[in-house]
Length: 127
Image (cartoon, rainbow, N blue to C red):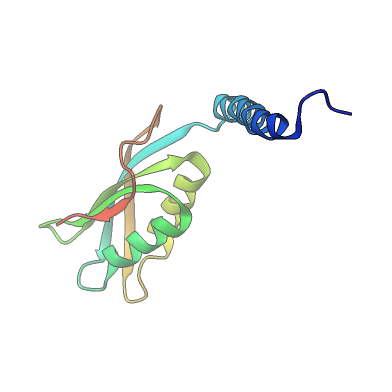
């Protein structure tokens, strides 16, 4: 039989669970995979074909943050941040898939680096 009255045990239990959860989160964060950031520019038929809208949708599905915008020279540029494997998935999509009506001739990636925290909270189209 428990020495604590039932009401006291009910109050104590959540605090114990929170302490354990806190330790679990700290442990998970210390072993988390590194975050990556990469800039990109996509060349080809990528303007006027909903490329930015599809990019935003795909980035949100994959779970990366950053931005995308059209350039004055007819390309699409942006930045992607997130866990390395998710950034790599987005890089593949930007290089090989795009929007249904697009034609990707090439995609240049630059400034790829490991970051300690995300600089964006979501993925947006810039104008």
